[in-house]
Image 1 (cartoon, rainbow, N blue to C red):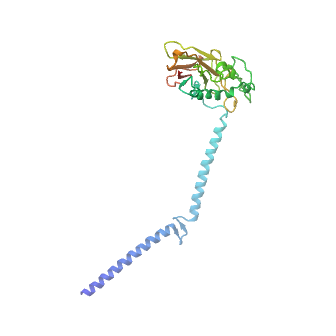
Image 2 (cartoon, rainbow, N blue to C red):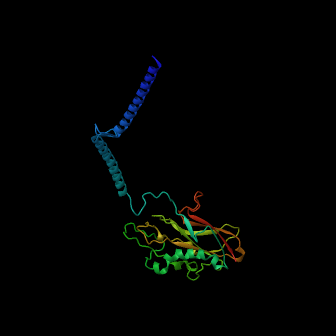
Image 3 (cartoon, helix red, strand yellow):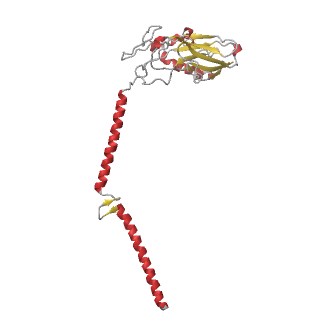
Length: 292
């Protein structure tokens, strides 16, 4: 074979390779187009319209069944719930105590009203719902007796008048004793539905120091009367007000500029106040420092 024939052979071979590659490329493009939609079989993404219809029908029935089962389960569960009383109340065994003013450390200069106005404002805000004019709309309940009204559709509310707190009511002294350096601290017990403390609960406060700190309690002896129990929940008992105890710290000038740590506990009942894991269960601790 001469040189000219060899060149012709190479050209033919090269042309054949090009045609082969173009044909493979066309086949590849055609296969992807046929997978998306094949006009010969009418398939879309490899399935006919009837096949897609069956799949959609299956999932429609399947998820409809799951949705129906979930709805039925929720409906059955809701029938067992009481909108007024939690079904399980084991999270809180005994109520905690909180104070107003809402501060762990209460420090102020008694000679400067701007220094303690925010404290007395908190006390006035708390006692708005305890104003005598509002409480007179509520019921007079039996002292020392539980106010049980499980079968009553409308729960009555026992009166707790602001004036009961006397020197710590903010009525005779709008400064709640802060002006004279003998501040009032108001203590309240958190609400627990259905709670009926046994015995005769009262609040007792002690100062953590070598000598005792004189205090006054309002109501007398820091008593939490049983007539305010039980509480029936926000929906059934919307106007309920929990009893308060105010303690007036009778600080002297010798106590000024010294931080006083005071711990208050609920005592005289079965309510717990000694759980080391919860420092607010049945008790509360705060610090007071007065200067002039």
